[in-house]
Image (tube, one colour):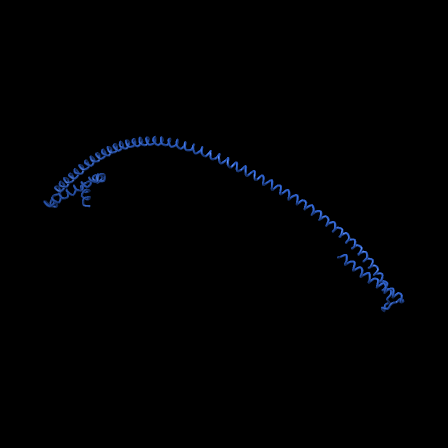
Length: 275
């Protein structure tokens, strides 16, 4: 901090600090120089008290000190510029040398790549030729095997077709036989069904005729019964005593017996018809 205050007091604007930023070795050298000047100033103080100096003597001493510091800073700046120029020249030289090395390396790499590429192309052509010959051999072998397999499968297919045709003929013969047998059975069944139908039709016709006859007989019997009822009603008086003579009573009784006999015979015939 004291060094900075002193530099600002003597009018130093910081060129040396910028040079020190550009070149750290120059900055360390300037610090060493400042320390040396401070030690010299301390020696002067020890030899002679500065406070005892006059104003003019102090200004002269400060001016001489500042001039010496400025000269030292200018010398350091010149040295830094020279070092920078040397560094730039060395960097340019190194860059040109690196470019030359890189171009030579690139040329060597390109030549090596071209040789490798040509070698790879020649080997690739050889591999392609070998692969094509192998593929042609494999293709010929595969074609021969395929032809053999196709011939064997064709023979097997013909044998299977022949056996299948024989089996189909046998099945057709069996089916035609079964169909004819079934047709004969169906014809017999139809004829038997027609016969049974005729018998049932005849039975139904006879049953219908018997029912109609029984119905007519019943109608006649009911009519006769109504007549007898009228005769009975007319023959009985109001006090439930017969109003006619004994002949009339016997005739009514005979008519009642005849009616009962007809009813019993009608019931028997109806039960027979139902059976």
